[in-house]
Length: 69
Image 1 (cartoon, rainbow, N blue to C red):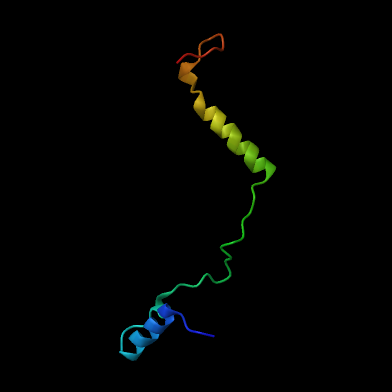
Image 2 (cartoon, rainbow, N blue to C red):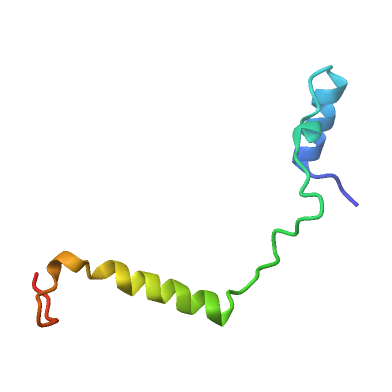
């Protein structure tokens, strides 16, 4: 197979005595960046509860339960 232009440039820099940039690349180790974990129903409900509780502060409510803007 053919070499990419970037790989050819990296090899040329290594031959000329410059630093190999592939050494500086980090490794993901055991972590897979493509895997996602969906939230459980409990987490979703907790988030919605917090979200709606935050929108209406206690100072905007009247004694009869209505609120004003």
